[in-house]
Amino acid sequence: MKLRRCSDACSNLVMGVFPSISKISRKGKCLFLVLVSFSIVAWIATISSDSSVKPVEGSAITPGFQDAEGFSRLELESEMQQSVEERVEDLATKQSCPERSPLIRGAVKLSFEPSLTLKQVESENEEVVEGQYDPADCTARQSVAILIPHRNRERHLLYLLHHLHPFLQRQQLHYAIYVIHQAGDATFNRAKLLNVGYLEALKDWSWDCFIFHDVDLVPENDQNLYVCAEQPKHLVVGRNSTGYKLRYKGYFGGVSAMTKEQFLKVNGFPNSYWGWGGEDDDLRIRIQLQKMVILRPSPEVARYTMVFHSRDSGNQVNKE
Image (cartoon, rainbow, N blue to C red; front, side, top):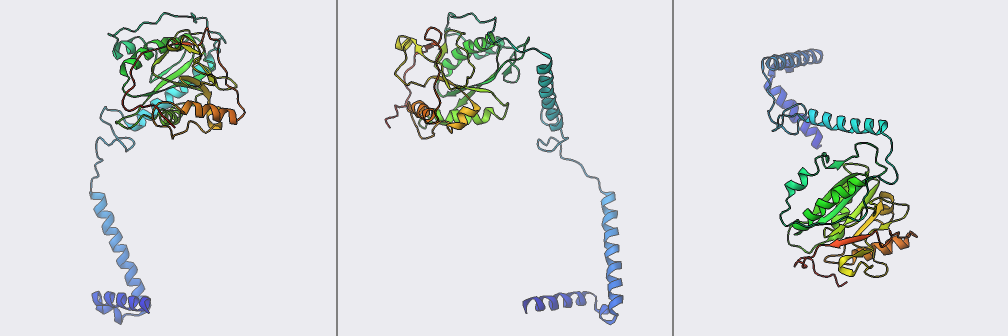
């Protein structure tokens, strides 16, 4: 009944607008309506042809329009695609790097100058393009993402970057360094930052290897290779603060290396550890549950200098 009343009301409305139509036959009414429809369409087309449509300038989301720096989105995408194609072509023409890089020096003397600046670190690493480095003379055997969780450690980060870039370049790696910063004053969560860094890094490249790296540990010997193996690797056998001995049996913290497959197999780091400690032991247990074995370099090679710092208020010891 409601539909019927609606139809009647609509018919009455039409009849009210065109009262003379009611006296015309059904075929005549149809012909009349068709003629009116064509007239309306023709009128709209006439108005549209006279109107000028101007695009909004400076749109950052519309393809073909200029952005604030004068580059269109299509141009930027084209440059990115060209960069990828150039790298693929470069990989096809260069030979693989040797298993042992001829640039490796062994133990190196570390310096921690208070006057060091980020601009200085950047000027020393002009070969790092768009956050990534590729060996000039050969194709790296592994592509490696270095993930560094960070907060309130700017000076430590500068020292690490200052030494880590040449360290990795001497190993002839294709690499990128990701600094994952936790903002705010909430309790620090190293594990979550590393999980986020892992996911974000994969948006840039299909990395073969992931190095989970504390910001206050600087490697002393470039024979400690930052590459992944068939099993997860723990790279910090000793540090200056522990007399260059393993902190405790089963220790898997500081700096570790895992492939994408290994990391997925253990379902990454646990997100539930807030504050200092616990997440690395949990990861070790996950590795053992998956029947994997942790590998370590020799104590003479896997040596680190820990840059001293006091514990901040947002990184208390996790007592769980």
